[in-house]
Length: 284
Image (cartoon, rainbow, N blue to C red):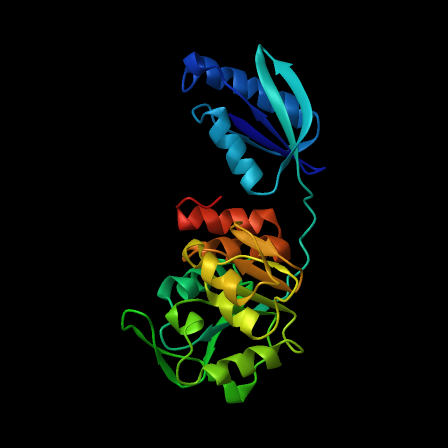
């Protein structure tokens, strides 16, 4: 496989026959291809005679190259062309992400999105998101006993681009300070353009009056309970339900899917793919 970047922002990849990969024959053919393509005006040529074509194509597509559909024959080997704008990308403004914290919050519900948004970075390596936590008290106790010191309390009334509302027993079952949590969520709507729930965090959004007459999702084990309490909300079995300024996600690990989904909305598929690659899991 070989990659070529031209002055117009094209990249051409060539499949070397499997029996030739790593051989002197492949090296000679690719050397001839390099001379030919440089004569056509290519700025840079990167040759590789060992990597399988499918692996290299996945690498190009993950970095924003798009197939043009143009295929040439070169000594019996197909030469595929990809295209990507080579002009400098405009500076992406840092997005402010605020994660709501409360006693008996499910750890993965907030830790998953925290990890995803923290990993997002631009071509220069600069972080694309600032991620902070907010709660009714300076320290909260998660489900399982983990103690977390939050960055801000409700009195700070922080503005943000996104408020993440995680789930857990503390979201579903009212306890001390529950009305304060609902009041904070309700007051966030005017100053935070996007509010998203993870798992049973949808109970908090519904009790705040946000989901009436809308589509939503929640943890599969809580579907009946949710429908009984909020009959005017159309509950769906989808992993993510996007209603514009409100997004819900279903399941404990869905916070990762949700954060990747929002990254793609904000910064494009390339950003999402790079963070998903670093997670090294089921996410694509």
